[in-house]
Amino acid sequence: MLNIRIEKTTTPKELPSKDNPLRFGTIFTDHMFIMNYDEGKGWHDARIVPYQPLNLEPSAMVFHYGQEMFEGLKAYKTEDGRTLLFRPDKNIERANRSNQRLCIPEIDPDDFMDALKAIVEMDEAWIPTKEGTSLYIRPFVIATDPFLGVRPSSSYLFIIILSPVGAYYPEGLDPVKIWVEDEYVRAVKGGIGAVKTGGNYVASMKSQVKAHDEGYSQVLWLDGVHRKYIEEVGAMNIFFKIDGTIVTPELSGSILPGVTRASVLELCKEWGLPVKEERISIDEIYEAHKKGHLEEVFGTGTAAVISPVGQLRWDKHIMTIQGGGIGPISQKLYDTITGIQLGRIKDIHNWTVEVK
Ligand code: COI
Image 1: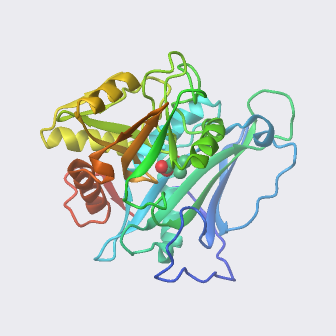
Image 2: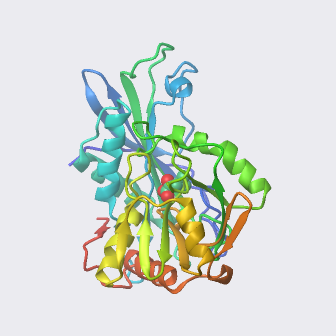
């Protein structure tokens, strides 16, 4: 059991009101978890303290070379008052795979789980209960050595902050419009596209700004070599239903292995739907659309859950899907996953972990 020192806030903030729409990632709870790493000492000094600014040297390596890892998962309050985390073990495994790739020391998975449970339990009054809301959990590690040479840092901070959230997109469960990017690229095999780190997200911003200006919510990335094969949406993995078959890009090494992606694949297989994880090109999607075979498109992610896509724009082609509405599989997946997360549907997969 991780030994966590606790310092409670003496000035608790006001909880958001029940009708606050909770825009994604704008409100933070009263406390945060912190643990230090120093070479020779390992991870040490785990503590929960009031949510507060960090005191870092301007020369801290994270500011210069971006050595940082982050994760995203959610906590939910069930109708009978239990607090549930959704597949936290998967986030912990992925965090340590990211840490390995980014030369950040790994965190003991049991300590990570103890830290998650402790900080969520501390601020559980902040878990919102309105339909479509949850407590978003953002664990991250930053490199703190005050040094301008390029090498892995020898000191780090592991921090967990919490934010009560509503839907990631202002559209909620209404379908989003997505721009297929064929000029900029996000990642290439052998790079860091498969790990969760800020660099992948800053790589996406130029293109996202362009897409926003054109009235699109997000960008769908194509592979960095051929600019042809579908990758992911940046904040989500992407799925297509083509002529009855659920298709998603295979984990190529340059896309993020999403926890919701894995859950959707398992559910679709259990429901007897034909499922393919394979390389699929934007031309194939366009052809399927022209023939009337592109039945549904949806994104999956922790923040976004299931996000139906009503329109894809690729070059001059505009593909409208499901008449711009939500398809039956997208709706069923959303209802099932949120039902399990909220304890309304029996969790036969043991995906939820109770806090306490
Ligand atoms: C998540 O779904 O948790 C993510 O990390 C996406 C994020 C960029 C909001």
